[in-house]
Amino acid sequence: MPFHIVAAKQEDAAQIARLHVQAFTSNVIMQAIYPSPSIWQELEKATETKILDDIEHPQTTVLAALDVDETSSASKVVGYAVWSHPVYKDTAALDPTRWKLPPGTDYNVLGPWRAETAKVADCVIGRIPRYDLAWLVVSAAYVRRGIGTRLLRWGLDLCDSQNVPAYVESTVEAADDFYVKAGFEERDRIRLGVKGMMYEEVACVYVPRHE
Image 1 (spheres, rainbow, N blue to C red):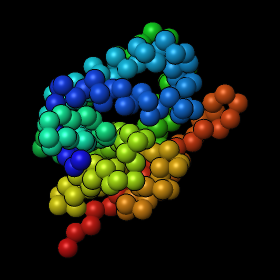
Image 2: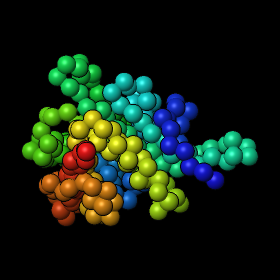
Image 3: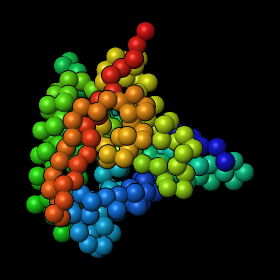
């Protein structure tokens, strides 16, 4: 069946939220922030609400990768990406949508992690106009079929045509296996002690290619 990359609709939000939770349940920092199964159930609902808000936000694009059955026209979401658009000096910056996180969220982990990511982003790319890739997830059953690349290229093509950079914070594995190969450059690491170990992610910048 063919895959289609489209702007997500409100009816896609529940599938995107389910995919999001499935993708991050094994992530160390996410496990620390949301430390019980009941919280993850509520997180899925919170993610659906956030995606619905992002779909309506004029400075955010939510993409859905759909696996479409051409015979029945039925489709399911097998990947998604959330891109925040650049805001220029002559453009009014709208307030970003906010997470409404579930009770039990460990803010003693989330707070320091947010502070570290903000500090690194400020050092790496500052406040210049850019595309921010907030999330990119492909269902485990559909990896290595080019879906992630197409979700990524949507934003990078805009970077190239508009001559603005892109920024993403990635797991170490995804940075090495995916983002660097797509043209991103590692600029710094985000580190935080979690559960007696040092957890880290990679701050990556895409420099636009233009003629």
